[in-house]
Length: 347
Image (cartoon, rainbow, N blue to C red; front, top):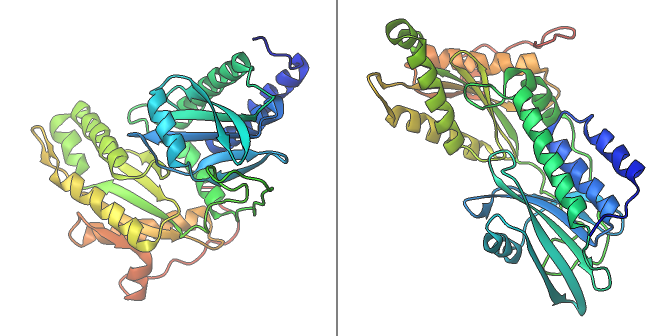
């Protein structure tokens, strides 16, 4: 059925979305925009990896359209698995009311299957499928454009240009979220939000003796090593973690919302996976890692410098290991870095 929404309003929303340069903010904007245009009871966006939701979903809930983070109920995950990349509509009784709901696939959104969930109460049957489909196509295409400008062309990882903004967002305090009333038991409560983050960690990774690969075998072999390393990185970390190719044989991982134990376990898992991989004609290529916690009001340049000091220690003391800046300073093995005076641009 054709949409009855005024064209100027839709164009205004689209123009606002195209001013966004951050993928996470783009998701929030799309959820909020569709909520305003469709006036549903609830709308949500979530991603699946191997049939499981790997991160909290975005939810907008009537009547105030606040966009919150919340878990995806198992019943809804089951519906998404049943949909298997297609559209699915159903109705059910919940809390004495009839709920009309639908799932719309979002084409391979940032390397994961994604779905938009839309819910209406009885008497307001969902009939704006053409509008939804059009917005989802627009959203997917715009995400692809952002990826093209923000990702390294060889490895597909985020590029160095995006690093500064990502770190600054993580260092900024999160605004508090509040919710409305009247959530059904089978869905997240409107006030549901992510628990306070356990911490964010920046790891600087450098391939050991990589120059020898280029010197002996040439840059084509070197590129193959970098590509394989990026694939091992993607397998070793969560979808919510941020992976960067920082330049040459240097990579950065930002581990989000995890404690020290979880961060170091993930980094050690990656280090071991690299050491265990056998590269054709090259054999073993190991990686050294320097880690620092992202906290306080530290400058981005200072944080990178601290991680680099830990990396330099790992390189100079046997390579193929994970070194934590705070531990090294506490043990007197590395001199504490002094904050830089004034404002310094990283790039």
